[in-house]
Length: 345
Image (cartoon, rainbow, N blue to C red; front, side, top):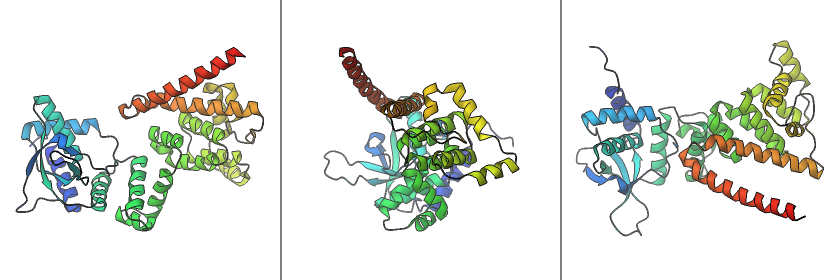
């Protein structure tokens, strides 16, 4: 029998069944299935996934439109019982199917109603269910994985990262790395959000961030623009921190590695303003110590411009657009005040 194009119904059902079995959420004899309006069901408070694959959701919705809602969703009563009105729930498992069913209902122009089974679940259980549901699919971003580790640290305190790694089916080193990502400053998290493969590079740049924010911001922007690899970033960070990296440079020459100095200088000349040269780390030349007022102001200008460039790339994300808009408005008002004072002088 030839394979039918479009939605792979069996593969999705198999995946849902395997995950449901793994996290212990399967329908049992005697379970009561409730039909609950979608607007009474909130997402899990421990849902780390920030983005969903639109194509996968569309494929799933196509199958649901043909075959209806397969299976049930699992929810828990909303812990806050002080609210009046109908009972509200939090979704523990089934976020993809819920999104797909919303699409089907919207296309049909009918109210969205969800078939749910209510379970009494603790925060720890909801977190574990969400983590297993997402990690088994292996398509979380590094920032989403870091969020999971941080939640586990909070809810399972004083469990160590080795134990948390085992809870998630990962190694201790994996958990330690994600815990470090969770502690990164927001501009370096933005770098990872835009280019997940720069996760270890951003962690390396964080060493410089502790000493010289402006130089670190310039290097982060350069790494993002040029796609520098970890070895190149590590050399530049070591040089900016004034560490002896002669041994690493010699090793690079022996293995005929790319000349990081040329890469850095070429990228800076192509797209960075001249003033960035005072803060951009370069191999073989120490970062300028920002001691004079002029240098400090210039470096801060570069840092702010770097942040604005990152925001410009993030503005296409609806989840980020409003906060970026408000932040830009505040910055613009402050700039207008400063310009007004300068005009008065």
